[in-house]
Image 1 (cartoon, rainbow, N blue to C red):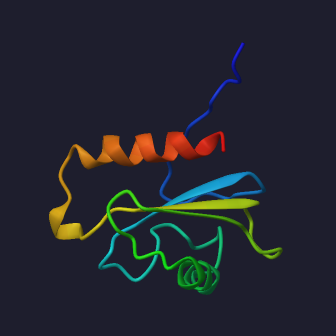
Image 2 (spheres, helix red, strand yellow):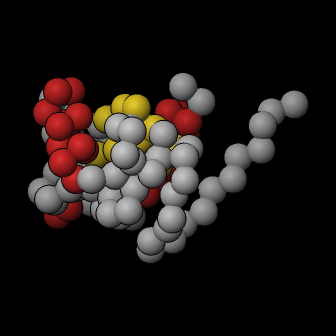
Image 3 (spheres, rainbow, N blue to C red):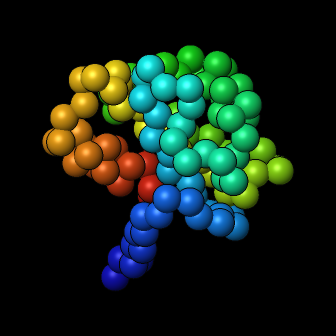
Length: 102
């Protein structure tokens, strides 16, 4: 029997441990909704080390620093915001689902 997967969406959420999934457009300043989960500086440092450029469906997966609300962070790149189409939400969801169990 497989584990039950619980998914929720919110504008802002209080995270205490677990996995945080953030989305980032290539032409954006940083991941959306990172405030309260992890500092933008921590994401920027991890992105620099991994050479993450927020290309479409690219993934940055790292253990969060000690002061972060989450234990693990997955940032999914969306590519340029001007190139996004409705179908990309399904692609991003599939990308996230492929990383949840790993």
